Amino acid sequence: MSKEFEIVREFEVQATPEQVWEALTEGTAGWLWPMEYEHREGGAAPFGGTVTAWDPPHRLTGRVETPEGAENQTFNQLDHVIEPREGGRAWVRYVHSGIFVDDWDNQYDGADKHTDFYLHTLRQYLEHFPGLTPVYAAVEGPAASGAPDAFTVLGRALGLPDDAAAGTAVRVGLPGPDAVDAVLDYRNQYFIGLRTADSLYRFFGRNAFGGTVGVVVHRFGTGQDADAEPGVKRTEAAWQNWIDGVFA
Image (cartoon, rainbow, N blue to C red):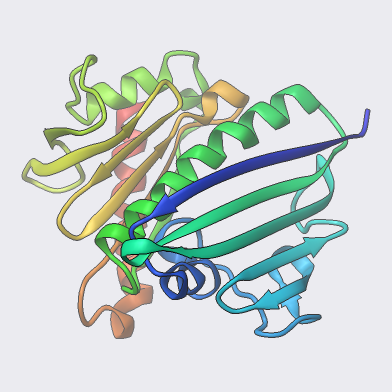
């Protein structure tokens, strides 16, 4: 049965409105996934949508009636209001609304929980890697990573203690010969976020929502643009081998 939804979040971040605007319009690969807005009202928005509000750096709205690649949804809108705050900070109001046409409770629950993780990653990007262009890579786990305990298995494969909480300094086993120092910047039963000196690693327990475990890497550094495509392929290959091995 079709039913409307609305997910609203308000937060402050240690970044200027201009930096937030850049992250939402040009820097999405640094915290979400690569996507583009045409820089004008009435221009093209992601997923076949239209920009319905373009007021830099205060208001950005993108609306799409039939989202590309979204089988369970008709109409989707992302609305952002940005205001300055003292001390070089910004306040953001984020509203995601639309219509789910099937499995409403599960779809809403997944979207609601993903929102908190994505917006947390936005704040991490703005506070630690503002304006940097990343190598963005994403992989999905094999069918076995859809098991109920798959996300627990993944956390242990990384070397995370079961009781390690967000804010903890950890040493983790990522693809490569050596363990890596990181900060566990986010953790609950659905998501894990790791931050290193040059990367944000995001782990998605989508097995809880009927899918498989996923990994997204936002790797920052100087001089990466010319090598972006080979870098993406190498990163994705390394992580695909890693996650396939975890669930072999």
